[in-house]
Image (cartoon, rainbow, N blue to C red; front, side, top):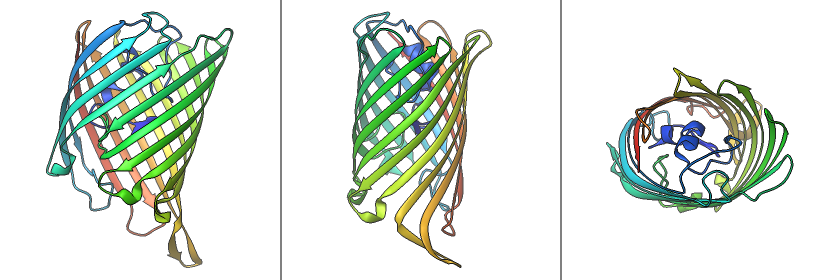
Length: 314
């Protein structure tokens, strides 16, 4: 459900992890999300956060259960420079609780390190390393992930940038070892700054997932549009839409004209609102609708997610 990524939008602390919220809090940005030309933030920061959410179909199945969840946690941040950091590092620990499925109860850890070498001219370079143990506060995930991403950006003008990014990710599923996988992906995106705090990001993604078992191999293609704007003077609103197609070459579906590979399609409109209550405190609310259809009968579902978050910075 994250934006790599990225992404994703509703998990245990998504409203804190939108592009606008990340910039406001000085947290390393997800690889597919835009950042300002010059982001100013503290050298050191500590955030305490809480989140509560509702997911009408946590299992992603036609008969999936609803889930009510909550999380509290701490997040630390280091930046090598307040105005133009070469290195950003963050670590988050969160206590996650959910009902009626206690298997989502866990303590999650998420660590990020982003290197931003100083290049001249219109070129920008970003290298991001990520480790998450039992997911993070931003998702419902019971896996351990290790990822490295490399982004190259060229800015045609102050208002227009083109990005290319590759990611290599290793995933270990705690509940289903047969889903352990090596994942490779490529993203191409444009970022357009339209003035008055508005920003439009368009992204195309191709992903290749090589799992331990052939049945869990898949390829995924997706397209995303996200519009960020300033509302009511200081609030930030982010509206997004994602469409993706996931193909399982080793899962065959019997149709009238023969056996074909299984193909799932997902549509995800989402809306996030972030409101500052002061200089060091934020409240957020997010909503996402997810619809899956498939050429395999009986696999369609619709899910709704709502999340409320509160963050305090010291």
